Length: 183
Image 1 (cartoon, one colour):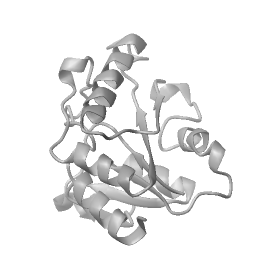
Image 2 (tube, rainbow, N blue to C red):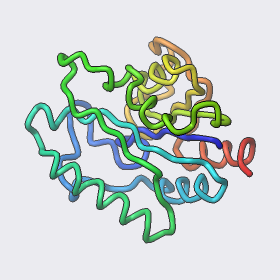
Image 3 (cartoon, rainbow, N blue to C red):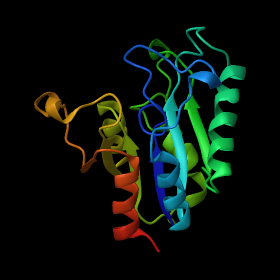
C-alpha cells in the first residue's frame, strides 16, 4: 500500500500568503490540477491523507467549526470529480504549545499510519515548505517539494535541507508517482 501525505495550503488550494490563513470556505480555492492529481493518486491505489498545521484555530482567527466547513468544501469538491482523501489530520495548536503533532513533529503522520504497521509500500510527503520537507525527513519518508505555494526554486540556496524531489505542482508530482510507483 503506497501512501501520500499532502499539506493543504499551497499544495491542494491556493496559498493565502505568508502569515495569512484560509479562515472560511469562501477563502478555499483549489489550485489548478490539484483535484485531477488526487484522483490520479486514487486511481493508482495510493492512500491520500491531508496533514496540515492550522494554528489559526488556536490563535482565534477561525473556529474548529470553520475548519470543518472548509473541509466539507474541499471533500465535496473532490467528490464531484470522483476523487477523495482517505483522511484529514490537522494540528490546531499554536507553535508555543510544544505539541507532538505540529509539523515538523511527526505525530499526525504516525496517527495516520497506525493501521499500516509493516504494510505500507512507498510513503511520500508532498508539501510547499521546508517545514513539510523536515517533517518527511523526521519520519524517514520521501519528501516532495511543490513550487505552488510558499517556497520558490530561486530560493534554493537558503533551503535548510534538500527535498528528495521537486515539482512545479501537485499534478506533476502525482504523474511522476503514478508512473513510477502506481499500480
